[in-house]
Amino acid sequence: AATICSEAGDYTLAGCDPIQCTRPTDVTGYDFDSATEVLSAPEFAVTGLACALGYTGTAAAEVCAAAGAYTLSGCTIITCTRPVDAAFEFGAVVETLTAPDFAVTGITCAAGFTAPAGETPTAEACTAPGPYIVKGCVTDTAACTRPATAGYVYDSASEVLNILTFVVTGVTCAANYVGTAVVATCTADTDPYVVTGCEPIMCTRPTTAGFDFTAAAEVLALPTFEVTGVACATGYTGTPVVTACAAAGPYSVTGCSETTTTTTTTTTTTTTAASTGGSTTEPTPASLVFNITGSFAFEADTDATVVHDVVQQMLITASGQPMEDVFVTVTTTAARRLATRRLAMTSFAVSFI
Image: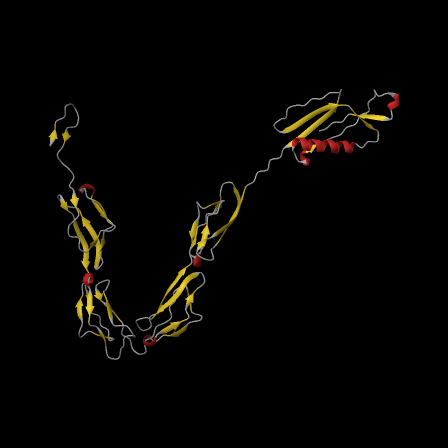
């Protein structure tokens, strides 16, 4: 419907809504486990759709033309066929050959072929249109081969590889692997026998303080272990070194040390010759200063070093500063005002700096 405008400009349209599709009720042959649907027709899209097990093709969804179910296409049922294999007898076989419901019974070994002890001939569904797979009948000379599966060591292995009398012992896990090696026979001539039970040792990321793993790239399985991008954390310095774990657990990191800051306080003490009396000034932010005034009279041969050492020790005790931060300088001057009878004496003005 159209509504006239009330002033110069566009008139108004109404009455049309987007078509809404729905998922079909019959979805046989299609797998929606990973599907995402946008069901409004103008933006219609179905992604992640796949063919179900036993079906083949490329799944597709087509938008509905009117409100209702959209259309599925592209997946067809897999139908197997009977194989041609001289080792098997199919005279009494019963077969359901469509893959979703596949079942085959009654297979036996043909003349001249035998199933290994404890086994019977088996059939497996095909994964694409074609013959199904039969296993379990071998000749007296059929033999397995040694596998090349990573993680196993055969240095001490003892092997009887004929399928009918198969025995293998002494297989162990390789370095950087953990577990117990288990061996099983093959089912067809020249196929490798099966080894399981050995898994790569897996390292984990450590929580050691002082290291930053933000940019780390890690391959944690030991056979191919590699870690790059580890850095020293804020407040730490050095060059990080990464070492793989020897058993399942955190790898090690070393090389980063906590940054330390040393603060040195210098104490300067000054004493100058003046009239008797004394005064002390307030310390400055960079040093602690004492000004001591007074007259000192000593024997002429008194060693000024004695004065230096005594005063320095007193200042160290009073200030709490180490000896290397307390500096004392002794300066001597003769006092002319002394009486003649004391000229043998000398007066010193002592300056402590």
